[in-house]
Length: 462
Ligand code: TYD
Ligand code: MG
Image: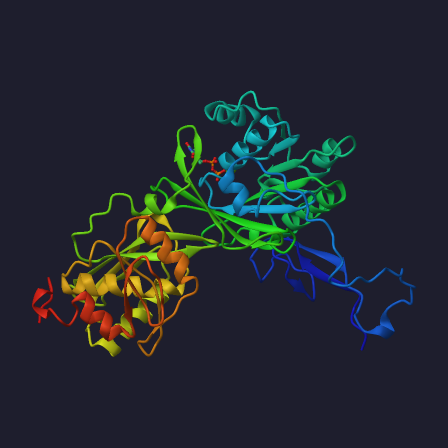
């Protein structure tokens, strides 16, 4: 039987229903369902026989010049973009509200404009006066940034189309932008997607680089950057813990550069300051004489980064022991605890365990396992780890320590920052540090005092 030619689509969440109703069962939105013509069925016979236009196919070797980059002059920002913004590209910057996205972008645009570039900043959230006040605080009042307050995508395009396209256009934020072609409320998936699509198409046609700012909510429920990620060329996330003054810009997708690259900034009263040597910052005021702290020699993107992993293992009161993690994956912690119990006989299961990555950084690398395990054992045994030692290596379920990529880069950074020793997986070679190769968690426990000095365990009821 032929499919009916209309369908009912929720303009808020995109769910398709077979009949109209006042409430969308999928997202709970009221009056969001509208009738739409159904997509043309796929199947060759059903397709109208329109003759397509021929186009030339090329081989992979065909050389095109690398796209020229538009560097903003903020080195950390440019590096995360892969060396600057590519003309005709669209970039999405996501992050929690209040993390500093508007500040970062205004600063980048201001710098670029001061160097003679043509930039447009469209604010859909803040009044012009607020943006001006921020620019003044950052000492960018005299930067020739073209400022506008608008939310309708047709208005925005009408304003910038015609005449010479600006080099960079920033839209703050994509959630406030709407198109009059749709009836859905601004911020809904349909609006965000359509408006982004129009802007991206303008970027491709005009050669302007477009920056879309988007809020991510903790629940991820409000239509936002996730729906736009596939439309844009690069996705950057601006992260940072509230209460910490570091901010990290991380590339999650980049068609023109490496991903997982990070740029580190420090928040100041005058805007964001670049941090050229983040390891020194994350190790900052380290008090290495207490147990439970291990320095992880990590890699973020193309850069080595040393950060302190702190653990606290304490006797649980009653009930289920507490497990709390900041900056690391809680599932990974559970796995490491289980491996330490099963393969090194530690007996952590009845204890409260807290794990914290210093400085508000989030670590995703499995190579952090060894540092986390060392910190846990050290806290459990009450035996401080050597102050001048770094750790890296992945721990498998069998308790073996597996090699991690780019060992030399990690160890070089450690040597540069004055570390003398490193606990590494088997087979790691490096000249500048005293290496101790660790094959499995039992050896690690012997090193970190977990089984060798049971009498030193603090707060443990035997
Ligand atoms: P804002 O850029 O408005 O965050 P977002 O656009 O992500 O919602 O910044 C939030 C607040 O933090 C704002 O009041 C300004 C302040 N701030 C500073 O004072 N210094 C800084 O370096 C940054 C990044 C922000
Ligand atoms: Mg903002």
